[in-house]
Each structure stands twice: as C-alpha cells, then as structure tokens.
Image (tube, rainbow, N blue to C red; front, top):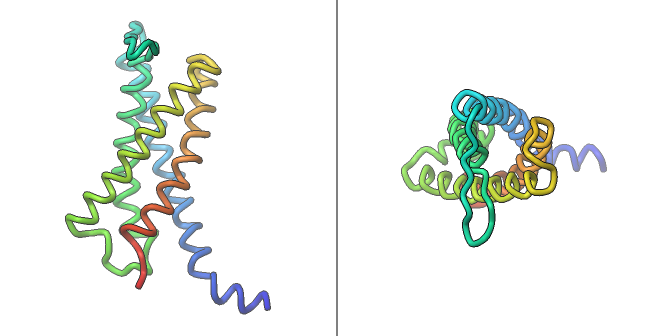
Amino acid sequence: MIKQLWGKYRELFWELFRFGLVGGISFLFDYGTLMLVRFLFFKDEAWEMALAGIKLNMNLLIATAAGFMVGVTVNYILSVIFVFRAAKGKGRDTKAVILFLMIAMVGLFLTEVLMHLGEVVFGDGDWAVTATKIAATLIVMFWNYISRKLLIFKTD
C-alpha cells in the first residue's frame, strides 16, 4: 500500500521539495535585500506616515517591498526552470507572467500586512523583523504554491 501511495504521489512530493528549496533560495534574496535596503538607505532616518489613523513605518514597508520584488523575480525564474517540471513549458507566456505577477502582488500585500502587524506586536528590532519575516514568508508560501499550481502550472 505504501509503495502504491509513493508511486502515486512521488512527483508531487519532489515538486513540493523543489518548491521549498526554491523558496529558501528566494527567501535569502528577499531577506538580504530587505536588510540591505533597511540598513543602507534607512539607517539614520525614520519615515513614518499615518493612514486612516494607523501609524506606518514606511522604511520597513519600502524595504519589505524591495526584498519581495527581488525574491519574486528569483522565484519566478527558478519555478519555471526547476519546480513545475511536470507542467512542461507552462508559465512562460505573457498570460502566465501576468498571472504570476498578480499572485505575487497578493503575496506582497499579505507580507506587508503581516510585517506591519509584527512591528505593532513585537517592535521593529532586528530579531522582531527577522521573526516576522520568516512567519510571513511561511504563510505566503502556501498562497504562492496553491495559486501557482492551480492557475499557472496546472497539469492536464
């Protein structure tokens, strides 16, 4: 029975493994960019803005967006080449790129909201930003995999 299940789900297991590996690589680019922008460009000045009565740390939000853009670019390239191999050629046309970017924008929105909530709850110290970024990445990872698998890289 286990052998039958393994035979049936083996490709899905390896796809999820590759997705996790690519996600880890993309996270390193994302997090590295976030910290680089945060400490290089916003080291000495705090830029805050109030929106609908909510105080926003614009430095953190901009650094998060910059990291996300770098990470999603790395992720797209590696997803097309390495992760969704069973989809054979899917994900490379204009429609797929637009869908990928739309999914990424939802992921960016979720990430920004979670980073803001993390800052409100834990503060904006390095450990808090790192812990919040890891948690946000794990949550958004599920969104990314499911939506990309169903909308872009679905196998017939």
